Each structure stands twice: as structure tokens, then as C-alpha cells.
Image 1: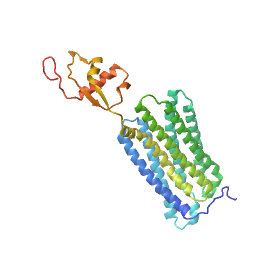
Image 2: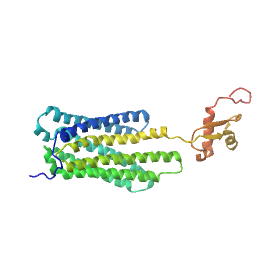
Image 3: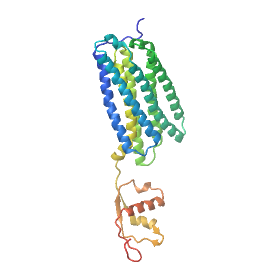
Image 4: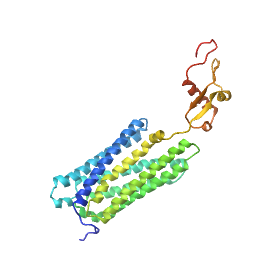
Length: 336
């Protein structure tokens, strides 16, 4: 039977073994970045919910296992099967398993994004949360079907028979990436308010959401088109090796962006005359009003106009006084 897909190029050592080897090198490099992001996450956010930390660790473990499978498959083709050209046509078990791991990683990342959209949808009373959950479930079903079909093939030439499933899975993943990025940006944009600090954080999360969606979508589309145009090469396989790394890395980068924004963003200093504030909202103790010497503090925080009540002003003054040297006296003349 003639192949269903016609390749634009003939298979060579460069676009078969060479492409798979470069894919493993790229996957190893990206895994190193992911591991660094994991360390930074646990160092910076030890108080994050247990569910989120468990999901992050699970993603890293699956990503590490996926890297092991890719290294094993290329080793079998290059070292164990050296000089065995017919062996290059055999789909190794490690290749089949890495497709399944790939599906699981993508579904977990999509689910974590959908969880955020669901919360934002409930806050804004929208319907995108329901849609996001539905498309993630549908994508999971298509991915599982693809993994099952891959386990039924023995040779790469047999992948022509399930080309429609490969195309559907990669296309669905790309569409979900675009939808999730657009939905998150839409709800985050609607969440913007009058506070500069809140808006700056929202802008950064929007930027990471959009960039991660575009990055993973570009990788999925490239893998899909290289398979359709060059099905008898391993170029699409090398791209597939790196796909899970992009998903895990981009998700961790978004989580770590909270610390990055805190370090990068600066706000103008504001000088506050505490004596004028004390006239409007005096602080008293149980024995009477404190005797305060004239005091002016120069601190860095958002403008006072954002403080909404006298109680917040009183709390702010109390915190500032705790950081000042003790120079007041009580009724008996002793130092307070």
C-alpha cells in the first residue's frame, strides 16, 4: 500500500538520527532550566498551597521521566542499533511511553490554567470557565486516543494510518493553548483596578500567559507541520522531545514571576508628615495620650491616597513608630 503522506525530502542521517539527537540535547537543556525554576519556586514560595506544590513536583517528575525515555530511545537507535538501518523503522517502547507522558504533562498544565480561569470566571460571572474545563477534558480524550493508537503501531511507516489522530491531537493542543491564553488575558484585563501595584502584577501575569501560550503553540504547530511535510524523518520527533519541557518551564516561569515583579517594580517615595496625621487620628494608650516629639518619616510605599480608612492610617503610624528610636517620655519623665 502506498504511503498516505508524501515527504518533501528523502531520509538522511542528518534528518533522522541527527534530528533526534538534537532534540535530546535541546530537551536536556530545557530540563535544566525547568529544574532551576523548580528550585527557585520552592525557595521563594514555601507558603504556597499544598495542592499547587504537589502539582509542580508531579510535573517535574513526569518531565524527568520523559527526558529519560527520550535518551533511552535515541541510545537504542544510535548505539545499540548502530548500522542497523531497518531498526530505525521500529517504534521503540520508550517512544510510545513518551507520547503518553507527553499527553499527561500537557493535560495537567492545561488543567492548572483552567483552574485559574474557573476562579476568575466565578469572580466575573462569565462562562469561559465552563468552556475551558470542557475543552481541556476534550483534549485529554483526544490525547489518550492518540497514545492508544501509538501503542498499536510497530513501524514508523504505520504512523501514516493514524496521521489524522496525530494531527488532531497537536491541533487540539494548539487551539487549547490559544484559548487559555486569551481567556486568562481577558479576565485579568477585567480585573484591573485603580491601584498601580495590582495592575502591574496583573500585566506581568498577562504577559507570561500570552508568551507561554504562543511558545507551546508554536512548538506544537511546528511538530505537526514537520510531520505532515516530512513524515519519513525524525524532525517532528525531535520537536516532540522538547514540547513537554516548554509546557512545564513556561508554567513554572509564570509562578515565579510573582517574585520577579516584586524585585523589579519600584514605586516613588512618599514623604509623610506624621504630626499632621496624628492631629487627625491620634494614638492613645490606656494611661493617656502619648507625648510625641515632632517626627517626619521618609518611607517607600504606595501614595497615602490609596489608604482607605483612619484605622489603616493609625496602623501605619504605629508600625512606623516601632521602627524609630525611643525618644519620648512618660508622665514621670522616664524614657518610654
